[in-house]
Length: 413
Ligand code: DSN
Image (tube, rainbow, N blue to C red; front, side):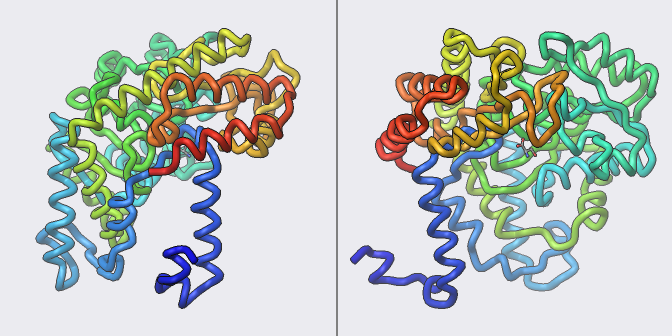
């Protein structure tokens, strides 16, 4: 009898059905290699904080200015998270750790900086941007006058195109950042373009936040006026968002988060963010982020050497975007085959993709989660070979055996 069976948890006693679903998810994650670029495995300490009793507490407002009594502990936790965030992103002048997600962070920041119906410019989703950068199906495309820039024929941002669009549209906010952009962004150049029209620069670093916190890729702190991010991707924290702002913008940003866009903050998530930031301030974090980046570079190199095309021909961060247009498979088909083999990946549009979003001609891969499991060169090369085999229609059962062996040899932390 296992320990869990002989000591059933309160959840197992109270609700066997939900407990069983969650146990299945534990098993799924254990027996799957997560290559979804926006996912990672946070620590047990982060998970413990995230499921703590403070989930019961209402704490609308900010530390020492709450609309409810009994918030002293919430104040201490939020202030600790804020201070750690500013230590981690040295040079940040203010931190708001309340956003429930990256999208909420972006919406709040944009409303503070551009105002309703204000003009914004961001990167198009299909070029590697994000829905919340002004896509017409996102509220950011509805409540703002949004225009979007794309990428050049090689998949890279063309700063001349960005400047041209910015001059034409005269936005109040220019957004730099994306969700499938695998190259470094020249934030100083973006800031210069924004300044030419009196716009503010918002850098969305949701994906590379951890790499930037560790200093292994260049970031926008001290350059962009406002920086938004999620805390659960490369940063390896709990699910949630965060905004860093220059001091003179902090008041407007804070009011835009609460009461503008959200009610009570999720204090248990803020506690978990504090734990994750504390972990990221430990010396080992830099080495982890360095390995994430090296693993992505090795993955890219192997895929290229095996004949696959990559958007931009490689990567500077944790993302590798495979362009399947010269193969006879779609992103959706490879995603399905990969899942059968035990690899969790996502289909993704490539720039200029002729296929619809639920099909696509691309596959987005990321190395943060497998690096958390301890992957290095040999494992990355093995995974790359599985991906190439899947694209070419190889034997899925054989790949499933390889993947299962890797899962067992590199268990979840
Ligand atoms: N959905 C996230 C991603 O996968 O990149 C961004 O919000």
